[in-house]
Length: 282
Length: 329
Image (cartoon, rainbow over all chains, first blue to last red; front, side, top):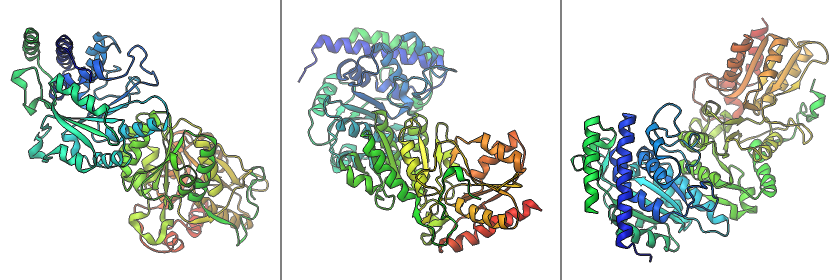
């Protein structure tokens, strides 16, 4: 396994911190959008785009690229910010989020930004598409592509996911890697009150998947889990990543109120200052 | 008389006219399309034989995926496969696809512009004894409202076969509406077929028509029988087979309206949002014309043999004739 040395970890932490700042700035400019989930997934997105994915940002339609499907499209600020920092488009463009004729639609819309793998927003549909990509990819002999799919934990309320989970198991899709953002919040409150999901990993395993649960902010654990997923045989692989909503901004962390709102000027300035202070701790 | 140019089935008015279901026409078409293009894949949700996808699945098991009873997954898995370069055909009963999975079709297929081909069989009252839960009378409305979608409702098995082959070569999301039962063969292998082109299948021997009947699906046969009877009464009628409901052949519809000033539409579907509605939207804007709609009037179906249901819900030949009498009055 490729281990992450301390220098690389520090580099990734700095990138994730910059992505978080971009997320806060773009949401402030947009005046609406989803803050908590986007900040909570910054470490995983950083790892995926800067370590895991086989991709060419300068050649985004490279046919042999890995595919990444963001199913819970409302956290797209983290997708857009990470793609910009990875070189897919200029970081300045992030300030057009949610504005008329922007490529960065409020929820990902591939007609406006064709380098996306799909459009998303209505929950529960991404995993099925990722399963379709994994089946199609397996039909093409040759280059082994990995299909990554990111899901929200509340999103697993949607029954369609379980149709896809069954099919992935039946088809033995070991080229499919699912990461569930286990942050325990959804719009109406705690996931365990709105619709208790209990032991999510056991549910997947009962459906025939392999997987593990990790701390979604620990780059060493993320690295290890992705290694396990890539080398997994015969079964699809799920990583239940426990994350803290709004991670990085103490005052907002864990508060479901931040699921669907954007920061004010004062809140933005406070958050950026806090994130800048964090850098010295990496 | 039948439009000679279209090389239609000359035995159409015989009592022993050959019958075959449009779903079987689809199944045969998919087998041919699949032989021509190895990127075509078939996906089904536990209705392989009923939808006639078995013809493809048996020949190409490596390109067929059985998803179990899961129509939402059916639509979105197909979208994912299409994004990787495949041309997926998904088949189920119309009530489930595009019924159950409408939003998946909207978001993952049409919103993305993926070339997924959606086959809804068992559409209409003609499903018969299975009852109202299974008689999909809303699918034309559900699909024609979606941007990027093409909607085709073939009049017979041969047209269904041709439509399947032609739609496999386009990049558009497409809905093909098929019926369960064997229905009369109207066209022949030589009859031309083009997506977006309506055809005048019946016309006066000479002179202008006083009335235009626009029909879709196997209802075209009923329209033909009515036209033939009217012809013997000396009433001059044109019958249009409107097999592509979207994009609508507005030029052909307007030409018919300008000639006849009177239109009757016929379909095995709700009047609201159906083919007649599409015709009305076109004519109201471009050439306001008197229209009578033959279709289901805001009701659900029930069990019965197809003929008695057609009579009860007023979509049979007598109902067409009543609409004609009314508009000619």
